[in-house]
Amino acid sequence: PPLCLRPAVKDLPQGDIPSLEALGLQMPAEEPRAACVFIGGEMAGMARVKEYLWDRDLLRYYVGSTNTMTPGKSPVGEDSTTKFSPWLAHGCISPQWLYREIEMYERRRTKNKSTYWLKHELIWRDYLRFGALAEVWGDDIFKLAGVRQELASRKWTQDQDKYRMWVEGRTGFPFVDCFMRELAATGFTNYIGREIVSWFLCRDLASEKGWLDWRMGAEYFEYILVDFEPSVNWGMWSFRIAPTTPSYEITAERVARVQSVEMLLWAHDHDWDAVWVKRWLPELRSLPAALALEPWRLLADDMAPH
Image 1: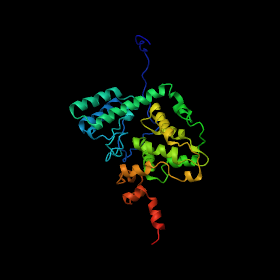
Image 2: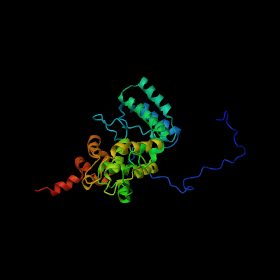
Image 3: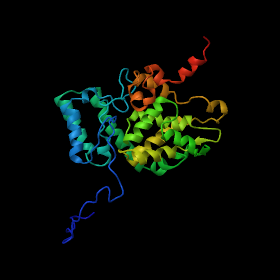
Image 4: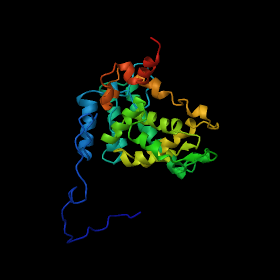
């Protein structure tokens, strides 16, 4: 590496920063349902950290991306998670600096399960980055057969109709569709939403022609996420397909059966009053919470003998 910086280029006209219009782009419309407004830059990122940790003291109640099994703890909501990831992904704030802020918070405010989980998730982020660099994963995270080619025997399909239904949030399962519509409108959804929709694509959109190519989902995330980071996105998709694509032959009976029960169970665990579902699926707002989460029960009621 160089021992010193090269001299700056002299007499180079500065010019103007091109506008969005000059680049053929438009400022996206403000989405009033968004859980957070993301503004780029280091100052905005540090301001978000200050607000979450120090001004509003929300860290003590932080649920976390992966702390979803604790009874009564739901990451679905505006303040349940930090929303730091876009600033981390773009290098606006340093994960090392953030880790030190959390440790300072533990000394000055409180040290509890919530602070532990936020530090744990920063470490998990590094684990994915180093795993992608290591030979054990490497570029296998981008390959159809997955890490170590464990899914090489699978038959895959690229059914565009099913894929488009998934992208547009028209699967008919509210706890899948709400997250996909939030993602399309804002470029962001929480960790549990990403888990639910990816499992659904990997498990439930299979047909007798084969499993739906999981890379279509990973590529859509790469396109739409405001916090996209290659090793995290592709590493997590590889992580999801390994245990969630069973090693049995697809049959008509199995295709008709729901495989990813999380989209049903977690809906009641984390959005029991259907607030999040109704926020993003306005067509369900008039229904009671139980029916908004499982609207097919309306059909069952209509078919029941009276």
